[in-house]
Amino acid sequence: MDSDKELAISRRGILAGTAISAAAAATSTLPNSAAAARAGANSAMPIMLKVNGQSRPLSLDTRTTLLDALREHLHLTGTKKGCDHGQCGACTVLVNGRRINSCLSLAIMHDGDEITTIEGLGTPDKLHPMQAAFVKHDGYQCGYCTPGQICSAVAVLEEIARGVPSHVQEDLTAAPRATNLEMRERMSGNICRCGAYSNIAEAMAEVAGVAG
Image (tube, rainbow, N blue to C red; front, side):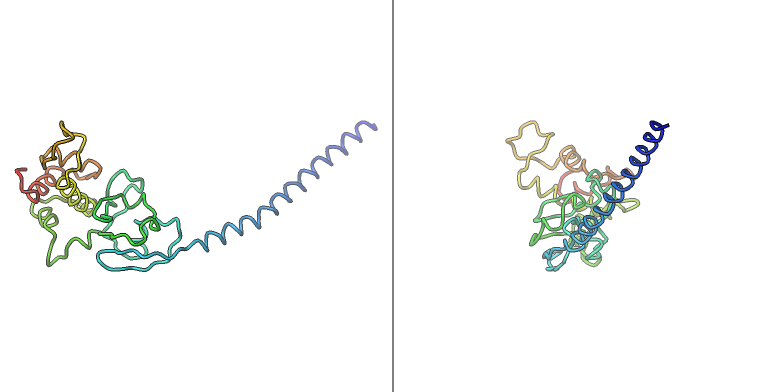
């Protein structure tokens, strides 16, 4: 009997102790959670983005991507959010003249940078030559990937003009040429789910001044 009583007491003690420990742990995490929430709320940082020729001051959470800053804060919705993993190219913009996937880059990394989105390349009344070529050659179908395609196409021709080599060049020391193969290789990071690749290549060839 005594041993049974001792066993029951020890079980009750263990259960009680466990409950007290769990409550203490839960209570101890509350201040930490609140502190984390406050830290997140107070993590905004003032930055200046130069977008399409205009200086745009913003105060952003340090975790905000450049894509979300453009779309959600500056309301430049021409830049599209596709896969959000840097795999489709729909979010391509030009930063200091070079193309990047804006979904993979934090906005605070571009304080003071010159950013060009599809809205900054041309207007309906005065299209950029690449935009006009896309219209002429029907380089878009649903149009969702088109802003990223056009920004990337503009950057590709500038890369070739600067002599930046690619994986399809036989001689990496030679100046690259805007061949169909060369342009297709450089555009491979931009996915068109409608399959308008041939039309896009024709548009780029026209702007580059070469046969499609």
